[in-house]
Length: 326
Image 1 (cartoon, rainbow, N blue to C red):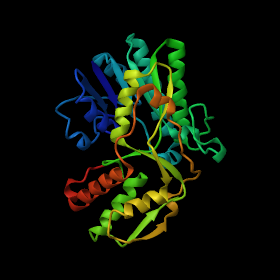
Image 2: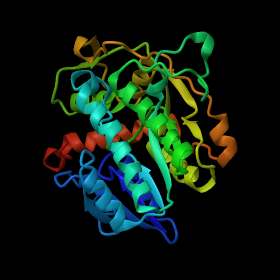
Image 3: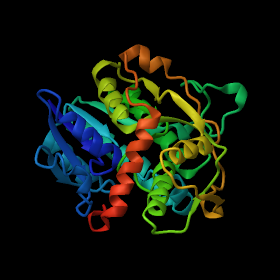
Image 4: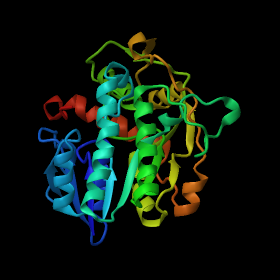
């Protein structure tokens, strides 16, 4: 079986590649930009085939699909940083929406029939009232960022290509997932990096934060990529699923858990630059549909995930010459 991952050098893509190389009879192909850093693929780079492409160039997408002729596609390549989408909305829409259209058109034009996982986001739901919790797949889509809008468009495009052309698309609305190697612009690694720098005496004993009152449901990336694989193994084409962990807390409670793993006692200060123009403060999902379809359950505890993230950043801070360039 040939499996193709777009965005293979990214956070989720690299973990998915690591998971897939251990599956029997699976050949892993990864699409990347010519200048993408390969550090996150160090453990599997000799076990997968890398192909250069550009998500903004439909010809390069078609050429890659024609070359590989994959049986399954995991479409993970995206502009995935919500605050950046407010600064660069056109680029976000172009990369996420037109890139997805280009991928689906390439599959349609080759005449192949792969299973196609289109990874969208819990950001499609936007701000949900307390009365609407937990969030189910039929909850109205009210995106509150250009990123969220782009993911709604990806989601509905994938559905339209299934209905119109019979492409075997599957959509996931993935809630917060994190782990070692996640970029420090995201909340858990941002806190962990600051704590590690304080431990090492490299910064003043202050942790800068954004909105600590937002509620998130956390999942380890290693559990998430297993869920993605089971999605393509067991779920019928055309469907959409929430995927999320079991542990829900505020961002402030997550920070408290991280601080419980260290002896430092920093001050906490809000940095206005870390506050979003419009925030999504309630992300409490119902994942019954996916779990009943696949039997999947998270295996890694919330505390273990945070411990692994903190240990990762301790290593990065202690060995800056080995730090991943992002």
